[in-house]
Image 1: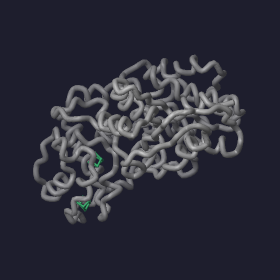
Image 2: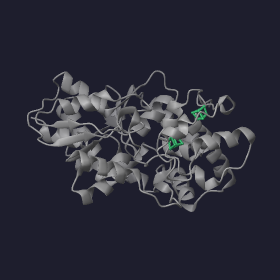
Image 3: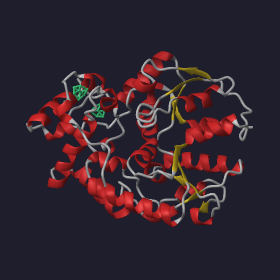
Image 4: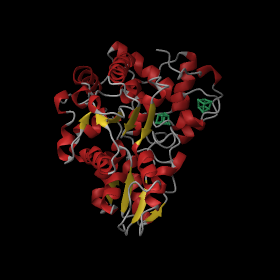
Length: 365
Ligand code: SF4
Ligand code: SF4
């Protein structure tokens, strides 16, 4: 498959905008401008430096010369993957994904275990008329903390009479992280398996719960006839059209954390804010670094599976400090990576981290 993400290292003018916006620059050994420079001359880059990249996309969004510096890094990682020069934990995540279609190697038969917690009847996509597929994502499928998100969305859709179906144990990893780790062959296999499932069941639209899945399906799957969207977009439509009615207050000071793959990489900034602004009593505050400047949570780009060598203050900790300074009681997220990384840091500050669906379920009539 031809990716549109072809890099253009020779057009780089060394302006440094990439490094200037990189959330890892200065604190870790990652210097993306220098990596592009060395790439131009075929010079060596220390392998470990490449793994600090979180694939946040800031460098690629900011680059005035369309170099796509993040893609340069993924290409270089590919070479390492091909030669087997990768850490054991990355290797294991890739093997697991090959065998069980998820990076943790959890049984495929447990993929839809979350559905048992929903209390509503969830159909297989083949038994639906509208062919609207809810794609859960590996994190939601296997992390018990994140089960609540597909559970909430399933309940909201069912109570609102919006038909949907799932693939159950046929669902497999979307490959967004796998491609960014650099395993292009495995990404291609996952893509083919997913597309064959979409075709087999005549899927017409895909409701994604993770911005990472949405991103790759929209940009790297080449599915021009399929509508792919994120659940915050659907939830806002449901509120706007009166399909769901908010009946209770949420009297807290709240800040919304823009996920990189939803915000800066896909331009979805407003819908989550519209949802929060429609809730009585909720005071919506803004982080100083928000929207396209949002601080990356460092959960993406394979960082979930890579133990960094250099110890430094994590972005999630910095983010929670910012929230504390602002007087925020609840940090709201719409991505499972952000939920996990921020929540781990927020507990000791007495700040709660909630997925936006958790707030919505609390305030509905
Ligand atoms: S932003 Fe683009 S042009 Fe500027 S240094 Fe980085 S890669 Fe080169
Ligand atoms: S994708 Fe993000 S973390 Fe990676 S090099 Fe670019 S700005 Fe830095």
